[in-house]
Image 1: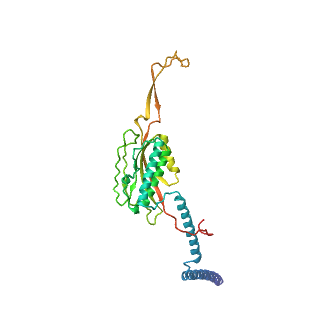
Image 2 (image 1 turned 90 degrees about the vertical axis):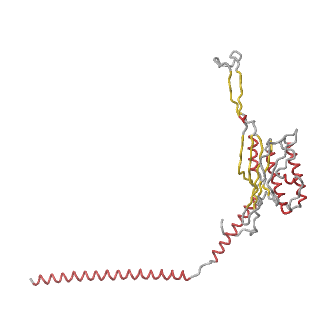
Image 3 (image 1 turned 60 degrees about the vertical axis):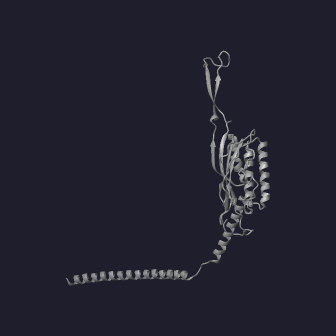
Length: 325
């Protein structure tokens, strides 16, 4: 009996000893892992403290790359501005007397061109510069932009003439002169001459017309044209504006057709016996056909913007390696 008890005690002690040894082994293993994690954490913290203690900005490499990128962007912008403004009409510095002379010469040339192309234009048409017909000298500071505006009107009128319009009824521009009133009263045409439609467009007053605001890339001139022409002429006008080297944007286009755009033509049918080609049983009486014509004139009111681009700033002439591609 005693021997059996001793055996039970020994087995129990051995089991308890093994469990204790296992617990000690697990504790040691956990402590070792904890030490490794703690060491890694302290190492990461040390690295982070080192990075925070450093002063990497500004980085000379980054500054060099950003400088190259900035120069490249400036060159691209300058090239774009140069391309857009290559054919634009520039202000012309001259005296008020020379501008008045140029105005009357331009008016005479445009009227003669219209007459040679059989385009109806009212006698003495002022091309939206009526306030200067009396020969009043404009302010000297207004002359450069007035000359520019006059040359733009000449370019636009030549596009209309090339498109073979039938009538030029009116032109509206932005008046920016120091004494501008915005009035554009049409004059009655002379008797016995080909005339355009009654003018119903007026100049508007805008002192900032054509001026490029500070820090902006472009300004714009706004014009309104009223003319009449066939459908092909209207399409030619739009194509001419699109092909013009000067950057032009059509902002509004109103087209009104004639009541006679569609005409009804009556045709009297012949007898069957009179026409050997007619089939038997052809209807007798009258046959009505609707004939669609494109000969009627279209009355058009066209509004457009002519862009004036800023001159590019001076940039580095030669591109350097690196930067934005």
